[in-house]
Length: 242
Image (cartoon, rainbow, N blue to C red; front, side):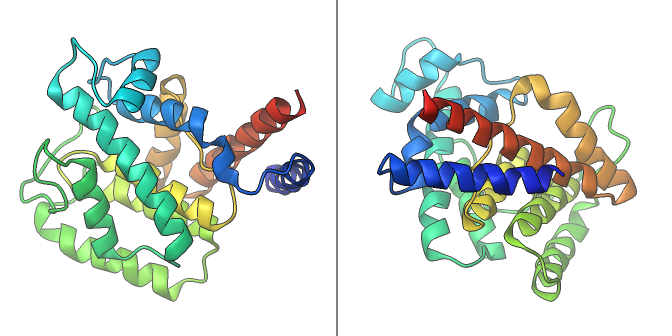
């Protein structure tokens, strides 16, 4: 039902864009980039830069009273979003090397990104723990083999890779932000608007990921993503109509 509603909303937005002589979905980026970046860097609770300050930081590239790491996390995330927007116009798919390159950009001047972890890690209070670091290379190769052999739509592909990045946890840091960037790349490839997941939705979002980690059930995460797309389209339709 929600998938059908999404398609109706997407058509309605495209028709309204034509009426308003809006040529590209990037028209909606200005407000979205700030919100998406705020949601992304706030999800883990370490970065304390508030939303209004993030808007200033994106525009001026610097703000006082915040750590260098916090500032770089914001600016790097914006660069990554710009990169996936560029890639969505030039690449059919993302390779394993693209994923590493995107992670490198995400962690630029924070620590060495784009390199799989070489230690074991544990996630507090999680029912599923990431695999031994020795298995990471094989699991990532298998992930991209599965992408090639399965007849996924772009939306399905984005959810599938995001879910596996969360389960494998191939990098020491930034796996969640990376996974959501990859998801948005594929949503844009499918012709959809990208989505952002607010901190207030954290528990519901993580619950869908845990369903995949523990039970290999990807349907809850897929439904969550489609519901977020519906919300995004309803918001942009309302904004344009007003």
